[in-house]
Image (cartoon, rainbow, N blue to C red; front, side, top):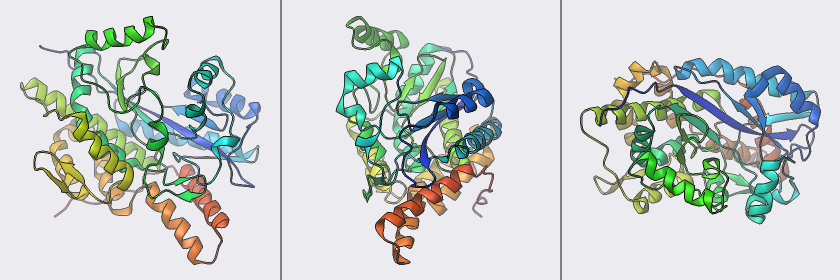
Length: 387
């Protein structure tokens, strides 16, 4: 089958938690005036999320990842400025270091009220944030074909984004505890294999006709065909605290999809592995992030993440050039060398304890670090190519 050449346009959605600058805890009920001020400044680029203590930003679709950077910087700065007027601040982290989920309330809106009633305690624990990356692929069947293949790479993407090592005041030992909370929800995890878009839509229609869901927006897989836009939406990642990291992860997803499309044009495709196997790497990314390697199923062994990353960078070099995101792809090496937000959070916590602070003070120090990094506009540079 011959598909039309996809645009591979790209957009990023980021979810933030709002914290009280005095207590560093979650803002249980941020004032309506804050959201009104953000909406007045940013329009439909900003939105409510499930929790009252959350706020979401959405970049416009862009041709290159680099074009997204000023949008993210502007939106983060705007929210930080408006929040500060109310004694609050946004943090780009997928869990809050110490606030209790039982003390949070959901946003009073029809969609969220329905979800709260339907899912009960499962959704009440959903004090988590994520980053979603949309890549424009206009052909419906091609979108499904690439979704089937990109599943293999989802753990690699998660590992680079981890920002949720703490939960309710404790170090979980996981780099992405968000995934543990998220996986309690229905219709999450790896997507299933579909022969075509018609096949996919037929399955969704069964759920809709049975009255289980209103539409495909309540299919919450790690990657899915967007129900609103002609895009493939990657949802597995934690929200990145640093803008540079977010851009790098988005560029990687964009490039991998273009690489898979190139294979398809040459009558080739990425080997498909069972969900049983990919889920092992998904767990390793959730538990260890980039620290302990992932399984190379072709070799049948665990390979250090650094080696896997270099292989992927080499594999997509042509695509990074074509999509104008070489700088962002090379920043992946900086993430590998310096660690993700999860590493910096744990290091901040341990350093504070070592300096004689108690547990509560150390956790607040983590929040302070997240506040500062969330405000940073990024563009710190990349590690050079290896000699």
